[in-house]
Image 1 (tube, helix red, strand yellow):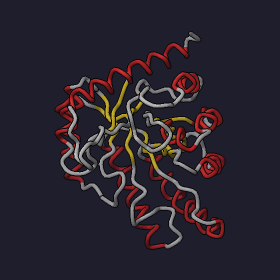
Image 2 (tube, helix red, strand yellow):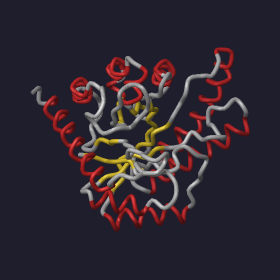
Image 3 (tube, one colour):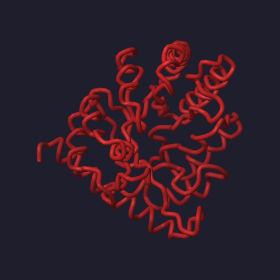
Image 4 (cartoon, one colour):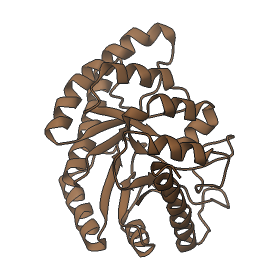
Length: 277
């Protein structure tokens, strides 16, 4: 039914306390999201340890957030940076396979400037030509996430690559900020293979609890019900509220309980929409 992101409180450091809290809260699935905004490469030793923690807490992985890198980007026109970014994504594909999940979520921004578009797309296609066979061999699909200004970029990617390999991860929070997000989701519903369910008031990427902001959840439930998404679990991607600057001072157990409650309510809305209710 529900998977929750491992980085709801922090994205670095020891993830074991978060996994323990997630399990105690009643979740059975996770979205691995640690180090998604970094150039961090996971070693085999670390992946083995994560797998042991997951078994210990009886958690499985619904999907995994790959990293497009901070300094290293698989879409860079600079070859050394592109190759380093390619290594980073391959690392996450390998990790997804080791942790028994079949989807990685990946960022792809629009080209910075129109003049760089040709070099940008040449780099993207060179990288995808290497990434997709590597992913297919490991039973992993690539879900490109809607960001704040990349709808046209994603439509172009979907037109270039087969649905069996490439799809969309829809983030309603991003769509709510950009405007027209649900219209975009409607146009790509046959390619939806992952979600980052969260809410906001459209002013910032707040990653709030479902129903805490202004996302049209009724419409999204209908879109999902009529989409290609066929997994039992959907991913919620949340951030605990922060007070005192960047310090989390809230009740973690209470936050996870609210995440579960609101997530289950939305899950029921999708189930009802599939039944035409």
